[in-house]
Length: 344
Image (cartoon, rainbow, N blue to C red; front, side, top):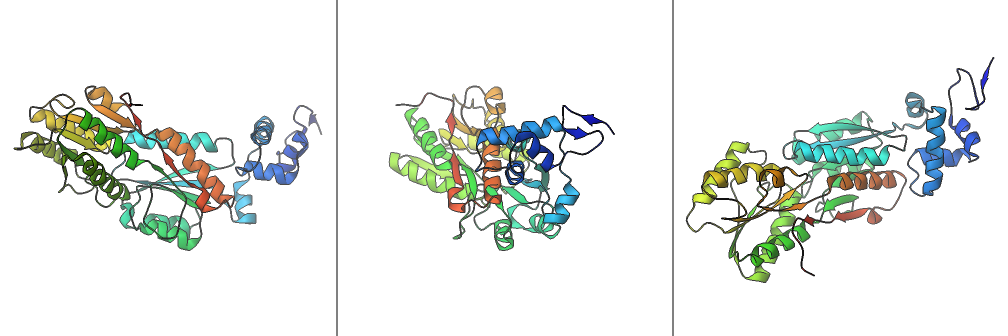
């Protein structure tokens, strides 16, 4: 029998939590907690454990862990499938992956084409115990997925808020601030008639934005309207046609706020079809998750959500919730980042 002194292992043996504990001089409980995310441990401790685990080639026995504890060491990201752009999805997964990279957790991504009107996808995850914690996107005001997870007592966090009385963990884009600075930007450019383009009336984000928009335009005393008649998941051709109709309508708005880039691209193309140059003939502020809008339409103003950071925050909040942190300490907002210089 031979021994690999550099790893403290018998040749052919599999490193365990005890192996890592001996290599680091830490207790088994500290090593175990660190590999589970260990939000309450010092960063130096977590880094020390992870370095040793990687050096020793430690791989959790997921089947054994599940049999012993009922834990899967898996987090599930449930992506609402009708409104998110590929850019948004890619950045969100990148952020989550960055945060859990130094933990024992893996990430599974589950598309949810039923949207927030159905809990079917979440109930399937719960029934089969596929994940220790779940991240939801695209929340609705009374989202049945949130209700199902709350009733089941499964740790979860949402990208977006809801109107439930019982609190839950969330990270959300600060839509109220986005609307406030967008209205101020358009008014400062001389706009007198503003249009809010946010047609997904099923989403909580829509309700939040509409409320904020009505309050902001009232403060400035300008005319306003909210786009109607476009169902969630409408094809780009429908959005583009509506852009054309806006551009050619009598008494058209002179300023537009669009709340997603997946809507913004076809909408701006429709405005061009109608003979307008977005950002010049009709002032425009659009939210974006990447740089596609500003690349295709450099004349418009954009406000960015840093989605990679949002993904990291969602993962942090979920691990903290799994570790038992209070829900009221796990509710955060991400700042909007405008592409123009803000006044002091």
